[in-house]
Image (cartoon, one colour):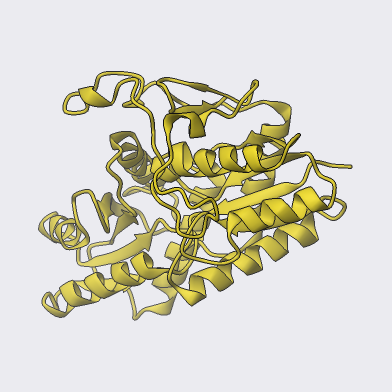
Length: 324
């Protein structure tokens, strides 16, 4: 019996986002016939993770592959999801799990972003002079490594697609990163920077998997900025969404986790090295925040919540765990 795939999402207050997640889990289930596939959220949405694990356990599964449905290795992937899974280990004797790495950056994600860009350009009026600039908008985090990864994706997306590049004959004038929360530059700041760099047409490209409150805010802030800058053609692309390409990446992460082939980059993790302004985090436990849907009744987790046990991961500090 193949180890089941447990897709773990953070959760959203957006009904459309929950529906996107459900459709995507269904896509994976159809693709991985013969392997049990289920999904759950750590907060905000149903089904909660604890129910998904309980169902797998009741069906006789004792080892699962948990793949975090996150694009970057920030707090949810590093602390909250491992902490939630560690509590499930305590609740279900004999249960173990392999933990997958975040989805990005990945070449397939760049291809999917390229498709969303092309659709936004094709849906708009005729191109204006001056080429196209892209504002890649990530969620934003208090983790500098996660924010730096969005910058990396922006650069990777620009490589080969920059001015004179092969991007369907439309060389991109620039690709700049921005964030919708917790980090700068903000969406208006990013748009203004591109305007000052001479962009006459800007495609706002959300670096988000599914619909949600924050992607909606990206569109709203972009439209507000565009309304006060009528000389700039601003177009908003769709989120990555439920698609076969995204399923390809999740299956790859699932297979990596079961092989133990987890090549996570910890070189710039603030829990491992003293980065300026973050020195206090070295060796500190990553404590998951309160999850209202967790039936344990605990408020905040403790350092012990983060150990995967056995050989599932290694920690830089008392509680912070990366999968190997």
